[in-house]
Image 1 (cartoon, rainbow, N blue to C red):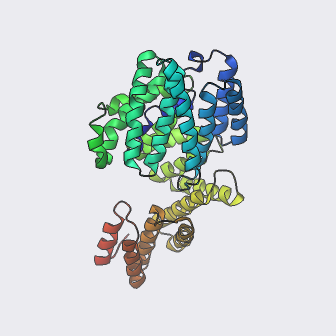
Image 2: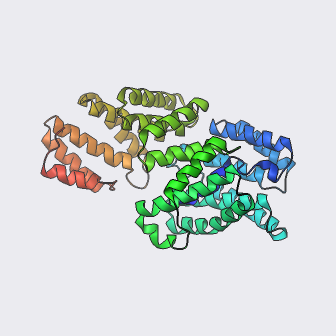
Image 3: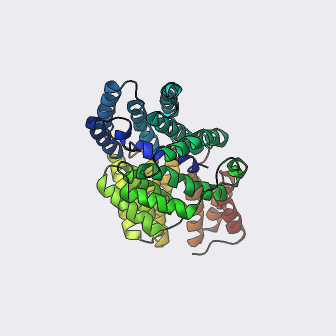
Length: 383
């Protein structure tokens, strides 16, 4: 359900339905666009200056508060495993919802209140889904859906709204198949249409006034995570990173997509650069990003059968995971230990390989990790 609940939030992040529909001041549009661009490039101080100006100039309007919360959201995205900002982010979204409720009591068709309440619910739900709080996430989606539907009726030709509808159409069709646990909940939602959703998102990416970039980001995610269209995700992430060179989220997708396309030299170069930025302390390039960089550099070298070099990266990745994984083993720890066992088998170090597979079985399962460990315990891995 994680992505299905994003049904309208991103066109709100990008000032969504043309800001002129609820505020006619050109200064509002200019400040919103400057702030949004700063957020994408992780220039949070600049973004805060712009959005604080909006909040001060329009204190009874939810835009400034909403966009300020988006700064926290991108900080969360940079280190998605770090939950330290969760409570602050939820409080800010609750504040936006409360303000919007007061506006809607006076005017149920207040466009700005509809959009920003829906956006706040959507982002809150997205965070809850990322934390596997499925019931709360689904409830936020249930509350947000009629809001995006009403918004669409108010302005059906607006390409920014089309982004929200496209997100819903795609993920309402896709997510129940990937996460069967949510199928009973989805009976309360309209059916989705994956092909139509992709078409609507593409239109938004090409023609939306404020939300084109966010539409591209969603297309990037769905092509990589669900469609397995790695060439398209590579193209989208590369273009976004070129425009926002400090964005670790886009940077990681470039590396992941390159690896999935067997562009091993490029993937190694990308993740080496990510590791360098992590070690230099660049904003957004956290220990979590460094762990991923170590893992993929190990994967590249393992694929090229440079086993001793690969092991050095996997050892570092495992050590870093033991520091970062506070509650339970992360997918990186589980898969790193599986890869170490596979390399030991390739090196004819069967006793060490067996110990690794047994260790993997004690760690939290990720995808088919336990099945592979059991398989290689029975029959050694052979490259």
